[in-house]
Image (cartoon, rainbow, N blue to C red):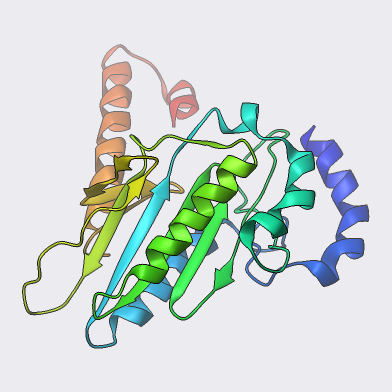
Length: 236
């Protein structure tokens, strides 16, 4: 299937290249899913340089996303349910087989909505605590998902709040989705990268070190049993 995808892609790309969104990260040469994470971080950090700014990121979780969605509805109903021009259909570049890809990227005053495959995030760039647009965009996204038979798992959906303001402020009121208040977390794994509310790399580094130590422990145990180098390399 991967070989067939590459063959078909060679014929499709010239036909659709003029319609591609500049923020499409999949099926583009020399662009990977890491670029999606970098874009999210760059956008957030740029906004946080402004006085009185915070960033709220809603990470959505879907229940059996690719069993319930009906791809034929996307083209017909997405624009109507979004309440504006036709959204862009993007892809973060995650490995997939017959996944319906849909990403909606729309820029309002200071809100960016991004969604890719079953990893979807709404990034709210908040100034002076004004989050009405952010909440409205989340509700629009939820309505759009319901319209297309995507079942949001509110219990596993999490929000990350990044606030670098020097003065202490009370935490923002939680966002409610389908009657459930979304939990605010200190760290979240998004597209393979551990992001925390400080936007530093400590959590991601610790996760990599833990994974590396686990792999090294296995190699040491195998070596103690007399397993030789060529066979050990198969476990790397």
